[in-house]
Amino acid sequence: MNSEKSLSGISDQPTKTLWLRHIVMASPEGTELGGGIGTVSNLISTILKKQDPSITLTVINTRGSQWNRLWPINFLVGFSKLFLCCLLNRPSVLHLHVSERFSFLRKVLLLLLGRTFRVPTILHHHGAELITSYRSGNGAMKFLVRSTVRMAALNLVLGEVHREFLAHDLGVDRDRIVVLHNATGDRRLARPDRTAYVSGRFRLLFLANLIPRKGVGELLSALALLRSRGTDVPVILAGGGRIDHYRRESAELGIADLCTFTGWVSGDGLSSLLESADTLVLPSFHEGLPMSILEALSAGVPVIATEVGSIPEVLNSGVDSLLLKPGDVPSLAQAIETLVKDHALRGALATAGRALFERKFTQEAYARDLMTVYGRVLEKPRSV
Image 1 (tube, rainbow, N blue to C red):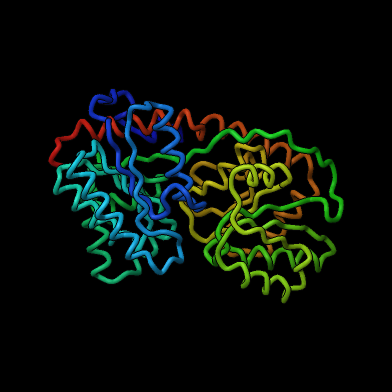
Image 2: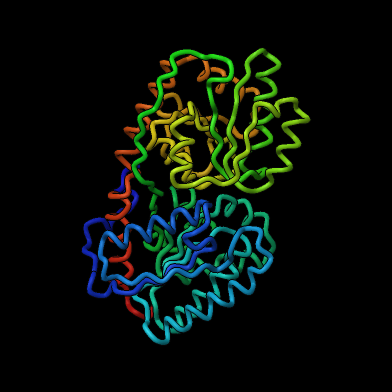
């Protein structure tokens, strides 16, 4: 899906830059943490500085780290910071990043505060489990989610599946829903040419939090299955989360020697991992549009992923990636083995993936679309 279609009906409208002087962005990860929302928040911060240095951006971390038990205190600090911003220097736009479940409780309070001061609010959705958590939730949670999304001046989503969900299930007006795919920096790398499989030489990269939703257990099981067939495939698991749990699981499966756990990696460390990787693997059960996949496309690293979230909207299995059903360990093992042994296919996927990145996921394209979105919000009445 191209950028113009994603921003259907608004891509030719000018941005009212005279009004765009102060943006408050609330993110559960701020711009410092390495998760997907934090990465997008940092991307937006970088873009705004390049786009117009006169724009003031205030970033509010509404949670802290994912497992931080002090998040209520962090939220109260962030709420107070937003109140002072609205009182002393009313923002042009309030940009709220939201995931699922209790993230909506935090964001509705910020949204109500913004409405009190008549600040147009964007709700930027990242929740990989938003649809499933909503449909399985109780009445109170459903009411909270519906009320929050309907109050926002504009809802940004990562793909068509979430656009349809907001419109059909949550009753949001379609003219208040815009698809804005994620983007990443250009990570074109001078990567080594590995023309054939040599035991211990081909390397998989898993780049995400180590949690069940990301399919970590299925990946380890697939590697154990491959070892039983005589093919050893090392993997680097770069991410936070349940590291000790999966380290023990890898030992129980007899593949501990194949698994390197690095913790979360960013910056130069991430570039180094991508340069040494032969394939990125992300066998998730639920996703939006993962940043790790875009980073792999940018770096020319072939991708194995699952047909979940917006992934199949932008990737074409067999052309620029290999896509599988989630939870299918034999198929995952087969896909890994195929790329281990088929150098030509790896090269073709890498080339097509890089071309896809250049067409759809560059920072420059994202900057144009984001400024168009801000222009759209600023054209609405200040009472929204």
